[in-house]
Image 1: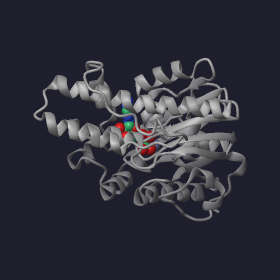
Image 2: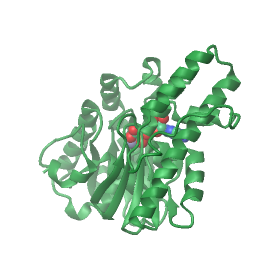
Image 3: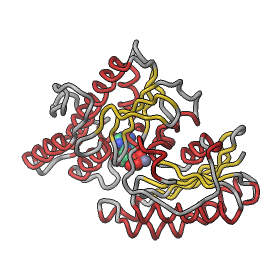
Length: 338
Ligand code: KG4
Ligand code: ZN
């Protein structure tokens, strides 16, 4: 079965085709980073307009790469939330109307569930029950996966998400938007130990996260030291990255001990961070194994949406209505899009 995936929840227009036996046949991502860069963050209206321009040509190109016709598609999966409502509406309207015109099922997908399932594209899927650390630009959640589609949130961010903290700190250091990857690259040049930032919420019980205090600590230091030379910027980036990673690793270890699972999946854009991947792999030993998709499948893509759609093919129905949800808890998958 050929599943077309469409992702348009934020600032990436992405299209993929996943075949249930042959795997990924096409996987295209168009980043809007240069469009939003001057504003220092995503401008929702610009994002919607750009999705409108890019998605149809991307579908044509994906079909060309997969060497197939529209008529050979068996289902269309698209991100229906959470995300920017206008941006979601572009992909959802296109996906649902394409499915309707072809007489095939339309499958609305939860963006964070797409991230959560993405490891299955590169390796054997984890065995339930397992844990997932979802760390993206808008979410930081520790999710207990009891069965496919049955999720319980054990911990979440009380303020800024991990990716948001990376982006805001990168902005303070003049690194542009989105800042996670450039900040991580700069941190590699940093001098270990020159600066030390607080590890938020580590001395409190529980599995929740809070990163806004850390960002404030960076802002205070930057204001004190300005103007910053390039080595000082790198040293701050290093200390910031260590503080975030230390916090994430400690909470994951705690969650593994509590839930006694043997596998933890790392997913979402922050999962592309090399140091986090290495420290989490080491930190979970010997209690649990870390599963993580390649970096390109951690950040936003449509392969994960097509793959999530393929997992839901048995529940897929003809499209009934176009409905999106800007906020959508992953624990309410069934309630929303009926
Ligand atoms: O999952 P994602 O692509 O989009 C959302 O669903 O939000 O995550 C984007 C976030 C951004 O905040 C970006 O700065 C961060 O992931 N990110 C990183 C890295 N690559 C992307 N953060 C830290 N290290 C990275 N290498
Ligand atoms: Zn995402």
